Image (cartoon, rainbow, N blue to C red; front, side, top):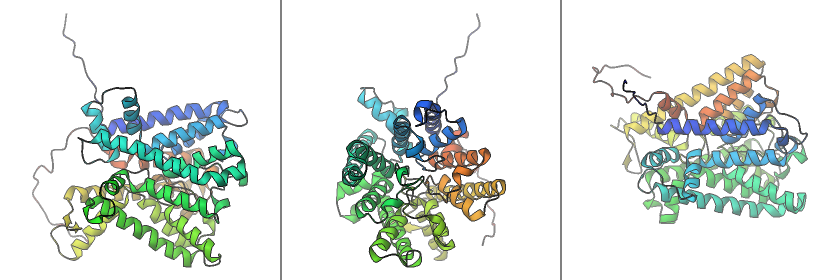
Length: 445
């Protein structure tokens, strides 16, 4: 009898993340196709269910149907479940469930979890996961409680509580799904543009979700002692202040000049934070000027912090590129920030992420523009929203053809799992470095 070789297939961390999201999307698709998921009791086509499941799992918020008027309570629960799992991460949720049932977490699972949540320390990864779980529950519960008086007074107790919980989870996970269809399909948060309770609560939910749990861990450990924060947390906080403050000033004077002072403040505040990457809106973007649309495109592509519920290329990526540019201008050997040198690996990674996201957004926009015969400005807005997993729209998504829908599906998936994750999953063989090729000069600029 000949010996038989038994092949053991072991997924890498990148492959586990990709497979986890894909499995959730397919499961959600099958559930959303069922008649029980719609208010009319009709079947939903595979393409539209697949699009919705991808958007929810990737916490994007682009929709083909108004969530409140098309989907039944069962369908809404399926969508919200995918938002919660997608926001916290499939690997994170799997780890939490395994811990709850008393299952031991293997070293490989811990390494995959570390990669999924961008945690620097493998030794404390389970404590960090517990912190993520508790923090998520606290923030989402607080948001639901804060908004409940408004929604209960409008919808009644049961529906008001459901809308509050749904909106809070959607905001903290930076998803952008809403249940305000009774005000008009795809109305998002426009009916509450002048309501400070809703606007400010959503603002803080989006901000807390997008800051990243490592930043919150620093804040918990060191309080207001900014100097003791990690370099990454310092960069994130400073960039957040800049990326909220500067767009808010422009929007206040450049886009909302005709609104009353209080409404201008709320509108500017909300529209400065929601593109990174929540997907709610209190304004019809078709009323924005070209400058306002381009600014929103940029904010969407930048996104939130690594290890957060937000998408985009991440604000640390932009910060690394900026400080690298400054160091080149100053003829420095290596870029530095807060008296800390930035490693070459971070620079290479930032360049790769930036180029990949820009390429996906531009190519997707060009393809959809050509297929649908829609202006490039509108399709770029939609494609940037997809790849950055934002969910803001200029209203063209529901009318797109099947091909264009699948282009956006691919963009959303790439944006959520990360282009580099997909590349690393495909290329499992370890690199041998640069093989010590001879160096040569290449002129740039």
